[in-house]
Image 1 (cartoon, rainbow, N blue to C red):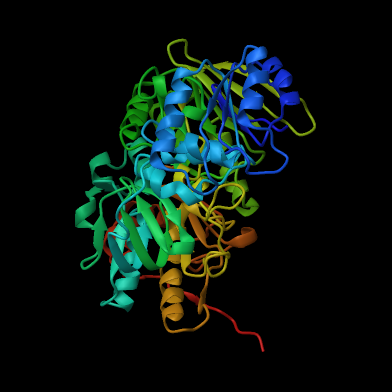
Image 2: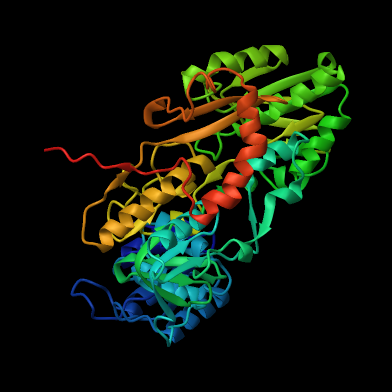
Amino acid sequence: MEIKTLTAGLSVSPQITQADLQTIKDNGFRSVICNRPDGEGADQPTFEELAEAARSLGLETAYIPIVAGKVADEDAATFGDALRDLPGPVLAYCRTGTRSATLWSLAQAETLSVADILTTTKAAGYDMGGVVRRITNGGKTPTDRADASYDTVIVGAGAAGIAVAASLRSRSPDMEIAIIDPADIHYYQPGWTMVGGGIFDAQDTARTMGSLIPKGVHWLKSAVAAFEPKEDVVILDGCRVVKYKRLIVCPGIKLDWHKVEGLVETLGKNGVTSNYRYDLAPYTWELVQNMKRGRAIFTQPPMPIKCAGAPQKAMYLSGDAWFRRGVLNDIDIQFNNAGGVLFGVKDYVPALEEYVKKYGASLNFFHNLVAVDGEAKKAWFDVAKPDTPVERVEMEFDMMHVCPPQTAPDFIRVSPLADAAGWVDVDQATLRHKTFENIWSLGDVMNAPNAKTAAAARIQAPIVAENIMADIGGRAPVAQYNGYGSCPLTVERGKIVLAEFGYGGTILPSFPKALIEGTKPSRLAWILKEWMLPPIYWKGMLKGREWMAKPEKVVVKS
């Protein structure tokens, strides 16, 4: 007997026998639900036989028999009533446990999110993909089929989504394209570091979503609940069904603030801030301006994260502001990084280390933020140095800039599109899904080993567009991605170390050394970041103007 826990109140298992009942009771269960019809298998006891043996042990029972593959809506309702009425915890069983897990999934559809249900059942070893539409429909069987159908559907209207929509429109003006995103506002997130450094105003990094969706592209203002790639279908919240010929998946990355105990409760007050949120970046600058002495902690979680340089950018710009005001000597800067290096591409590290020295910052590697008490001004870090037991350390602070842990969005992690780690599984050169040939992905959500930056998405968008057009024409992929990403490291106000690199840390500069030497701080790189990149983003990338983003062609080997 293999018992699999779904919740504190319910576990499921394959077929049980009378001999298992004592173990079931010893494990703390108080009730048993049978979901397997009598006589389904030659070796199964009848429900009455089990029920009689269960009663003798003080266990309550219920019989809700389900024919394999035929879970009716009323069956799920009956199962939900039984869970509510029977003393718990409850063990439900059928031949394999799948019917019991399905009943629970449908019964919980109105109280739990689709992602929570799929995560729970997947962890127990059960795939609920076959009933995902019913889960999104509140546990009820949908009466409709596809609500809409398009040539290409794009999930996500961030930098990657709008850019690839615009690139496709420029190549095929008659293509029927839909972009799915529930957000009202689109943000230029690379600007938030500059907001936190007092250079940009927050409102200049935001535009209404409707003003940016390319002309002729349908905007479906909704959230995606699930995917059915074998049916070429995306399911929206409310169980609306959208069919596609080709799908592009680029919903970005999830900032998992709740993963740090106490963080959500103290964000935006008690000296705790983050440039990773639009509403908090101005608070960063407020704290920097007001700080005259004390300790400032800057944190970086385990990879992957978007814009891996952003945590230290906040440190450099803050240190520069304190240096200019003459208070730096009275401020203890601590950079607590869950990783073991300052920056992943070694060529840029020497220049960055010079600024670490200038600001007197202490580099604490293998320090991962796990908890914070804002009112007490204390934070706790798990220190996991190689070949050393994990040690939890406490640090006091006056100001703390937090970079949150990050994962793939929940609805991606539980989908058939995801790899074992939860990211969309693509070929790193063509950005085409490894399993489903009419699906592509770009931006932060896919699993190619590149830096997750807007600059990467700028290069990826025309590559995906080119390869989709080739696919429409019956050809193999014609463009390939070399892993390009860019991280303009703002080491002081007026100078930037312009890190540009591809797969394996290969340096991929966009400018001649005589113009911008990427491994050294540059005034021209700062001008690029402050004055040129925002209009390139708004008026170029999001409009399908692929300035300095011409796709690299696939090399055909003879």
